[in-house]
Amino acid sequence: MFVARDIMRTEVITVTPETLVEEVIEILGRHRISGLPVVDHQNRPQGVITEHDVLPAIRANQLDQPVADHMSASLVVIDESTSLEDVTELFITKQIRRVPVTRDDQIVGMISRRDLIQMGNIRHQILDHLPVMTEERV
Image: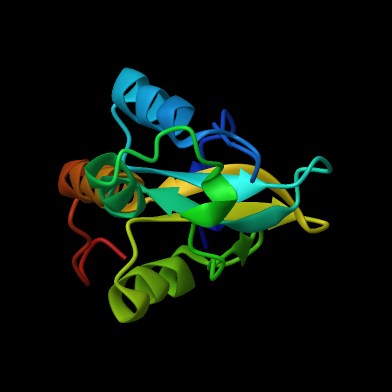
């Protein structure tokens, strides 16, 4: 059974509550991502800041404000041993795009919906190339 640590990306880009919104916008654009975990100085999750969160700041010309003023403090996280079946269910039920992966309350990875879709595609391709077992061959 596959678990979160098997497919998580370990190079996680994070920001702190003190990071300015203008820096978040630059990071999102440069890395072509739609959201970032917000962590404290011990790398513990504090929330998330997304494109949706920064749009009102752009409209109100509040780019010099800290992330803490615009982030969502409710953040769904999973442990690195969470099964991919449970991760998939979480994406479906919570309608989220990404989830930080933690070990000992610190972020150690990230899984996105795209990662799960790619994993499903790889599994599908592997299964397509396995010989079909019939009762005669068993």
